[in-house]
Image (cartoon, rainbow, N blue to C red):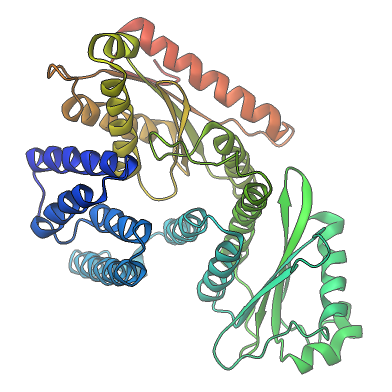
Length: 437
């Protein structure tokens, strides 16, 4: 069922109202609103996801799990329908751009990783997703520098594949750690048992039936914090460039997610989510931007950054009250979360300013994407008197020459995107300004 612009406006209003009820723990009213949306639009997944969240917060885990299964089923059906349309149109999966397919696969894994808040959950999702995506049989994540008594390794094995965490693989793992720590580059070996560099570990490889393997370092703030091991036990097929790219890219995000989870367990006063908008906060944005810039540089793909600001926000709060101002920010946060493609990173930067990371996006496309957001906000969000709000946006594309350090590149990108935002605010307001403005 196609959703008209008018219906979309109604859905957004209802969803924002439901989220506010959740924020103030008025769960019955939130459930009523969400179920209203789902009854009319059964395949509107944001409502189902929000409903599952309410059930979890109210202790109804079984009902939440049931909704999650429904989401997976609907997502699968929609993917199949999309695939059939592609085939009917003469552009089936076989003819799709392999790089685009790779990026979409990476985006899906990264989203699942960052949707997890607890270390054990992050490790479980990361290992299982890597096994699935890389046609592997076993994945081991080894974390370095752990406190005594704390588990330092996590493993996922396909059915029928034995665990390698019994101490017998320690020598092999140490050898692989030495290999990657020298250059901090991943190691990919197609025929592990007969590889001369692993000759001293041949018995271990045979014992665990490791036919092919990859070892990838986990790096956080230029420090080696762990190692990811991928094993193929039922085949000796080599590793493609796309598979190496996927592992390297995802490893960087796993490192960030693990470090954030560990920090949260140590200091519960430093969450990564902004409570009002439900978006990432400024601290997490900085860490995520660093990881995304590293991936963009390593994989040679573009990256854009956009800053958004609500015009005359102080006047809105002064005229209609702080609650009205909070509702504007909350609604804009909701629009950003639900109208940007997977892989985009949205955060509240400060006050009425938001920031969006757009990986694998050229400047022209980023400009179009953010202009769509601007028009959607103008059409959807109003003050208590019914006047539409205005949003100014600045967009810049990252410059990543090899000789430039990522720290310098990150500061320059933020500064230039901010400059574009201020240019938009000074010139015409309610507009998007990019390099060409």
